[in-house]
Length: 640
Image (cartoon, rainbow, N blue to C red; front, side, top):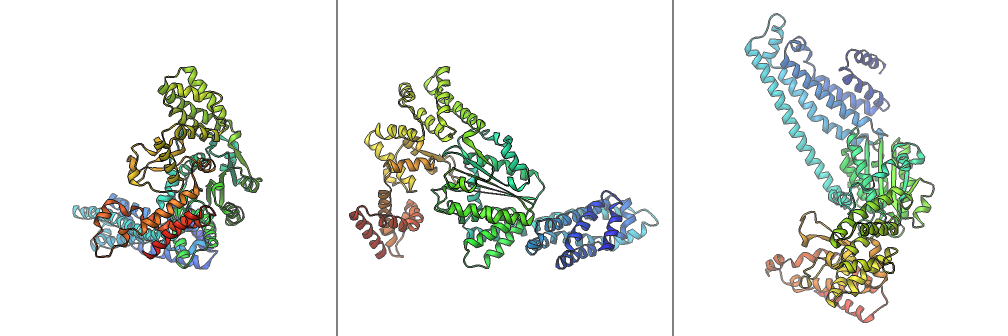
């Protein structure tokens, strides 16, 4: 090694360009010599490079006088730089020995087309005419025929680059897709599901939240590398805009990652959702995080594929270990967890303890600078666990309140245009809503949506009266309930309750009861509407969801939505649907009409969830008579 180092040092001083060749060689050999197996494999790889260059020196004089051959040399130089980029990708990871087996496999696949390129150039330079001309060059200039030969050589090299690049790309895409498809199935997470977490836009100004990047506490978390600042707790009341701010931070981190050196950092995120079965447990969080890291790094993909393909069942402990190994494979990593207060049961504690007790120590051991951002409510559990870490309280940040004021101002302009408000009336509206919001974006949004839905200017002014104006979020929901339920005709009242019941438990509307008005128009500020990815701008395909978990809780607590009755209705409907004629007819009968009519579109939900609805009904002590009806429907289904 000392002999090689002396040789390399000499060459490093020969030329600035030579340093790009010999520098990586010296660095890689210095690192690799700490492990015999790795240095042997590395030297074998360099031996393959040397064999492909063995006839290049023969053309030394000729290269200096021929531009075509200078291009050949440039092509060689490019190949070697690409080779060294792959080498450094293996040995620059923290704890590289731990990942060497999977990283080296990726390395061999990446350098294979590079070696092919070098060998094909070697074969072209071995042409008898070129070698004869190289000898002749020592005594005279070449003729036009040989110039044409050089031109053909240059064209051939271009073809080589194009062909090998295409072959490499196709092979890489095919192999990676096979592994990712397996991992998506095994982890029950697709890339589109992961992207959807971030791509769902919030109805606030796009500049909202940029104050966070100049906040001293955030800057300390983002920029400093001290152990004390590796965890940041961003908290606020329900509906304060924590998730929106988390998305702003994630997009900011993504831009930084894109502009930084490749393969130096990881970014992963997860949004817990109380009303989504695949978004409320530590297990689902780990699955999403691992899949994001798999999509970002081929070595991690190979590691995860090997670990998971050797296990029939993946335990939570296996996912924790795999996620820790994946995260610490690069020098820098960032994890953002939002909505931890929405996790079920003790899943919140499981997730936090993994981050603090397992992931952080593992990162410190591996030399990985890990940052964790946790967003959630101060619910008595999160704030207790994270009390020793830096935090940002949204309700105490003036800049956050100014964002709410700006949002209110934008919405008030639309309301002012609708009701032809005077300037002073509009300013009074802005002041009243902003001051009552107490740091809650959701409050401002719900109140303003409700005001915008008033039928007349008189109704609008009545709603602004002190006795009517809501002082908190629950009162804001009360005002909506009064407007869309108590002040409506009976048929609209029934529609509102039915739609809200469907949304709370993800049920599907009977087509015979379809309304001409949209769910948003009927249910007002209680619900949100987002576009379907597959069928954008088609109203019938829009996704309707509750505006916030607080709205769900409000509707249940005040009796607008009867949970037991919803489970009873769905249990009966699912059982009767699954035992209907279309599912019990013989195989010889034609079901083309049923397929075309969309009759089977409810099958996935009914088959997966009918048992859950029955369990909820059986667990209740209410309405024994109704319970018998559900049991009978289940029995009929079993016989069908």
